Structures are given as structure tokens and as C-alpha cells.
Length: 228
Image (cartoon, helix red, strand yellow):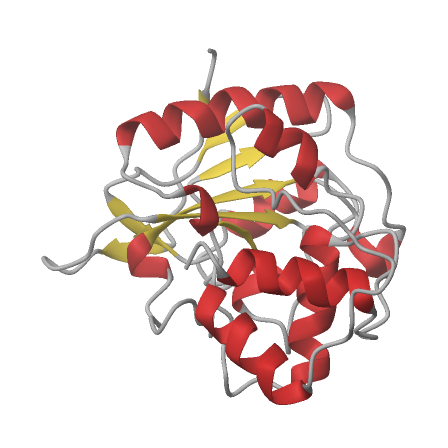
């Protein structure tokens, strides 16, 4: 796999106790790949990722995997808050919801799968810890968004996808149980429930992202909680 090198100044050292056990996907939310690379290489932006994948599938490494890239910001997963220190971050070029959100091209996803598999081989990252920015920061972020092909990636051993059967009489779950199940899976128990449900739907129920907990959403949440 060909990977271009464009070192960013925006990184730090991981702590000695940091274990890389998360892989985080983002979209850039910028109009072009050129703009994205300029921003992540600008020391005043204080933003970076380990890798950037343009829409044509070109992969550029910005930060060495052993270093702490600045991609997650204020975030939380499974009781941890130093997500930058415990993760590999991959940015995908996409204008995002602000500039014309669109589907991710085939060549971009193919490149992502190849890169992600290599990252997962190098690090002990469980499937449930392959996440989107919105999963770890549901109050602030929407990326990589509802058009990201999570199920397809999981079928290629990149990430987790729940297996479940929806029964016609499957009931909704009380808010307290929803919160318990979402938190058990990894989501921040302090974030507003509507934001967390929306983030969950973006990842696992992208055909209906409305923060409404119908029977299928409730069953998906309960299924995910079982693997915690």
C-alpha cells in the first residue's frame, strides 16, 4: 500500500501508560483535500490525524502512529477521556454536513479498509472500539455521518455490527434502561440522551437518524450492550 508522507507539527507524546485500543474515523468537513491538508499542517490550527484519505483513495500519513495526534478533542469512550492518547485517527475527505455532505467514493472506502486492517493488525483494538467522531463526542460532532458504510466495513472485519432479529412486538425500553445500555457499550453517560441516541443511530441505524427510540433502535442498543 502506497502511503504519502506529509508530517504535521500538530502532535505530542503519548503517556507511558497509554494503550492504543481505539480507531477513530472522521470526515474533514472541508471543501477540498488540499484545504484539509493545509489545515492539518498548520501549527495554529492545532488539528491533525495520523492519516488522511482523499476522495481518490490517496493516503497521506501526517503523524507517526506512536505519537499522539490531535483529532478527537473533548471526548469520551468507556470511561476514558484521553481518546487522543489511546487512539489512531483517520480523516476522510468529505465536505461534511456544512458544505454538502455526500457519499464516500468506492476508492476512498477501499483505501480506508486496507489501511484500517493494517492498523488493526499492529494494535490490539477490539471491534467495538472502531468508532466515529460522533460516537466519542455526540454533543459536538456528526462525523463521519449517516452515509458512512459501517456495516460494509464490519463485514470486512473493520469494526462491529450487531446481529439481531426484530420481533413485531419488540417493546421500547425505558429511558433509564436505554441510558444504562448505551453507557455499558461505551457512550458518555453525562451527554444528553437525545445526542447519544442520535450518534448511535448514525452508526447503527442510519436510515432513520431522528433521536427517536423505536423498537428497532432499542433492540440494537440492547444488542450492543451485551458485548460490553
